[in-house]
Amino acid sequence: MGRKLLIHNDKVPGINTLEVYRANGGYASVEKALKTMTPDQVTDEVKKSGLRGRGGAGFPTGLKWSFLAKPEGVPRYLVCNADESEPGTFKDRYLMEKIPHALIEGMITSSYALGAKRSYIYIRGEYFYVARILEQAIAEAYAAGWLGQNILGTEFSHDCYVQVGGGAYICGEETALLESLEGKRGNPRIKPPFPAVAGLWGCPTVVNNVETIAAVCPIVNMGGDEYAKIGIGKSTGTKLISASGHINKPGVYEIELGVPVEEFIFSEEYCGGIRNGKKLKAVVAGGSSVPILPTELILKTAKGEPRLMTYESLADGGFQTGTMLGSGGFIVMDEDTSIVKNLFTFTRFYHHESCGQCSPCREGTGWMEKILKKFLNGTAEESDVDLLWDIQSKIEGKTICPLGEAAAWPVAAAIRHFKQEFIDIAKSKKFVDISHYNRLNKIVA
Amino acid sequence: MGAQVHGTQEFNKGKRAELKFSEEAMKTVQKIISNYPEGKHKSALLPVLHVAQAEFGGWLSPEVMDYVASVLNIKPIEVFEVASFYTMYNLKPVGKCVLEVCQTSSCWLNGAEDIVKYIEKKLGIKVGETTKDGMFTLKVAECLGSCGTAPMLQCGASYHENLTFEKVDQLINDYKTAGQRRNYTDLDYKNTL
Image (cartoon, rainbow over all chains, first blue to last red; front, side, top):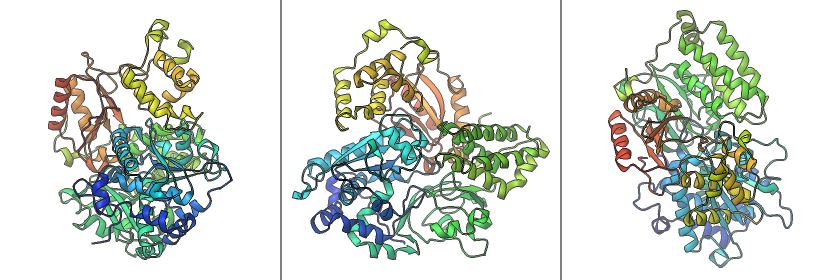
């Protein structure tokens, strides 16, 4: 059993309440930080921990914090990115729903480090009921003096608010999120300036993912050095993985970074193997935007070494033979899965979610969706595979925000590793989809 | 502000004059506005639009958007450009219960297409349509963050997960019997995470 630091108490009855959360050691990091540490010391511990952004990009959190501009007399903000929308990812929802105080505690401790008197949790609109759970937890925290004026009798005062979004994947991009938080369309901003200099309402702002902020609590409690001992190399600590698809035990798992992918998929402790005794075909390891890998490359690297659940091991081989840990949205597909159809669902998603600012993304995602539709209708030509490749290559790197890459990468990877499937459909002029037969065991005629 | 701003929807001055948040909704709106620093009240727009949609029949008519603009003291176009950007705001009337079936990867792998077909057949409507009695609208949605409990659908604040045809029968029956409008802002919700 690996160590768990974030959701170890998820099955404790009443853990969503302040009383039970506190009785299980909750809010210790606030006490420790406010009473015994300076804000810079908290930031130093986070730096030492090696914690990397858990939203997908994996940028070192302590470094991000150290970029925060601190001009005199200008308010600074911490904004929590709870817009979790990357297909395959549902870990933040689990954490917020089961242990809302873990996020609130992290917000307070992190805000102390950053000198933020106000913080906002921007949560995707579809998670409205989760926002209610957070608001309830915040109300409890105010009543008990963990939020508000002079927390624990110190000079530190803090207010934390929840804002619901309106349903837009793009608002998970931090500058689009800030636009949305300001009551505007979620159009990403051109960087620089980065939010650390000019973020919310033009003020210095740090935007961190839910899991990242929650991880600050154990880091402060145990110390950055201790935290860094968990994991392998630059992949320190624990990570929440959202496991879904054709597996026996879908759900959210907290792993110590470094667990072998094979163990994660097949052991009873985690996914429990492939459903219905089927064989593994492919995995999307870190949310829809990361490259899909076939069985032989997800279980072992091109060099033949066991692939591990770390930032580095999953990326080993670059995009030719590797992928990314991303958000930890781990989608497993069995031998019956049509990679073409799965790609179609991703591309339709990105077309739907493109904000429309940049032409390559706005037009390219729709064009790719149309071509993929031809494959599903059986009207595609072999040359459409090359056309798809060409279009994706002209989106990547040519847009304001990474949605362009997110839409291009899955297309490139599907063609790179499963080109024959596209060609077979184009040649036979026929598409048969049995990918989902074994779930409902019934099909509507 | 006129019909041209809102595409297909007509602007009715008479209807606009009648619009007013209930006392309770107004309190909620004031609370939301107070979440932001002085002068940053425009930030309240997204959450206030959710309140308005729930308050005025499940969709945002041109009149409602104009009213929200007046409440927040911003221009009507600032409301429309936001309402038309985000998928959760309905710019056309919808049924009392909007069934939104997630169709992205993990849900598709687990039979979401069959759930959609099953509901279409059961309710006698296609995706995007509303039943004649105004009870149900069927929509498809992109990833709702319920991949581990796929397939799923959202109705108002509730997540219905690990769907089977039997569960669909049950929930449609329950919603029909209750006969109420379901909103994202509802305090009561069901979920099976």
